[in-house]
Length: 202
Image 1 (cartoon, rainbow, N blue to C red):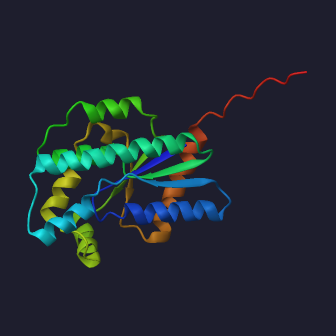
Image 2 (image 1 turned 30 degrees about the horizontal axis):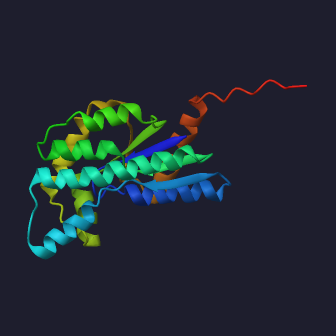
Image 3 (image 1 turned 120 degrees about the vertical axis):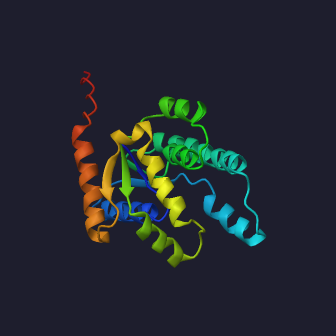
């Protein structure tokens, strides 16, 4: 069973993913957390340090390479794991970033999404860009503007896949958010048919 978390920067994806995994482990469940990052934070820090801003197409190309590699490795690991797999980010994030920058969607990422094992649910943490920006400023490791975050949120909403996402309010208190995520997991698990049992042999 694969659950993917998406959302704009500052929506709390990584924190929510860790909380979900911790809660399930505390209850005796088997769960694996995987991170499909694209190196955006590192690139942002370096760009700020050097006082440069790479062209959008170049930045997208670098991010896409990192993102695709991590997603492919994550799916290999997920295929070998017998339990719940929680993926922090996925290819949907890169498609939303492209839309934010006004870049074309392209064919490769949608094709790859179609051929990879489909997540059992994509949980989108819906955050107010102003609150997300406050969190980003507080942690001091990113350089996203409020305008960037607002455009990012709109880009997610414009994805063809967005309609099928499970939307969760990212501003919920940590405990309530963890409970909501667990509820989604339980609901999805209830809709997945149990594997057929093999006939007994004599």
